[in-house]
Image (spheres, rainbow over the protein chains, first blue to last red):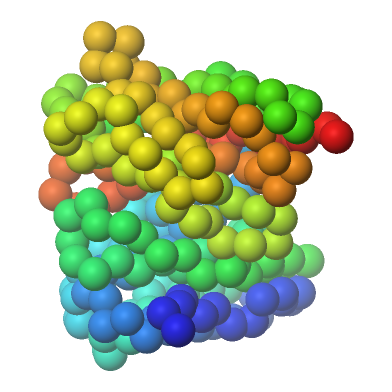
Length: 113
Length: 113
């Protein structure tokens, strides 16, 4: 089954404790992206990757890091989480760059205390 | 930069009634337009997309949308709503070469029986 898998689905942490949210897709997609969803703000892009070792900033990259060492994986790293990063995070992938259909993971709800 | 406005935060309709969700976009050239649906606790699922050609596009679950360049709109419609359509709906516009999607803030649909 084609899917984008995020882990964990729920995470509660404390300020400053490094964390990683994993994202994996099994569709051999080139393009992957991270979004955060906040009430009243819709989804905002954090980072995206057009292929292995190619990443770039989205609209709200501050406080986040990503890596793309393998085509299927695109982890989101918060080196020193802060309460303003409490949000719902989505990973998405699509076959190619350009406006192909994006497939979304089920989301990771993060709370930073 | 592109932007998307969904003027209705919350809409309530009766089951069997027709539905129209509004979406207005701002972009200098021909945009790529999308509607996504998010059911509670789920990721986003693509309902339909407009890239070019026929301005009336059909999507899944009986939804359709019409691109009106003169009004900068891409409204989503369904002739008869089902209780299972209760969800949050996001309009998105894509532009440029970086596969960047800009989402609206969403419209939450409630369906009464």
